[in-house]
Amino acid sequence: MIRTYRHHLQLLLTSAVLLLTGFATMSFSGCDSASKKLNDLQQAVWQNPEDPQAYIKLGNEYARQQQYDKAVDSYEKALTLNPQSGMTVYPALGAAYFNQKQYTRALGYFEKSLEFSPDDSLRFYDIGNAYLQLEKCDLAIEAYLQAIANSTAFEEAYYNLAICYIRTGQKAKAEEIYAWLQDKNNYLAVTLERHLENAR
Image 1: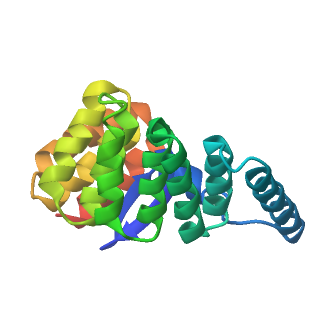
Image 2 (image 1 turned 30 degrees about the horizontal axis):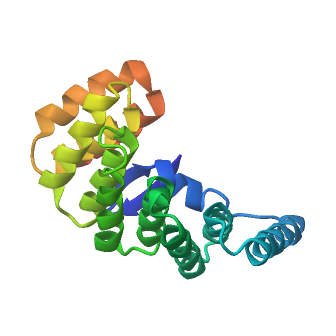
């Protein structure tokens, strides 16, 4: 689970964002391994320049190594070769831009991914996170509610929804989520409790 801080409020960002940033810390031996993996994936692209999956795998590795511009180039090449790869590529492009703090561009790709999976809770969650970073809490609330409607046990979506409620002065709704989280996820409940206390 990833945490990011903005205005001292903790947001939990998962899904594609987790995929792209979860491998940032590597040991020295891990660096050699990552370099070899990247080289192998580059070789696969050179050997199969018409294979969109090869570009997607290469893009994922670039993203894991936080080389987001190269990741974007690889994803866009995959999309050019096969427009139907948007189901995989759009969320990955959104995550790459999100991790570069280009939230408006990220939002566009997260929204495009709904063309392939209109009821995908993770995509609505990603959309909510982008709106929250853009300080558009009302739109973030709508997205989180949609994520929860499609996945009622989505604890992180509830947590971020509560953060939005706190920011928009709807403390009673945030407290309801806090009560719900106490039975579901103690870590999130304790973290949310601190935000509620700061809002008093």
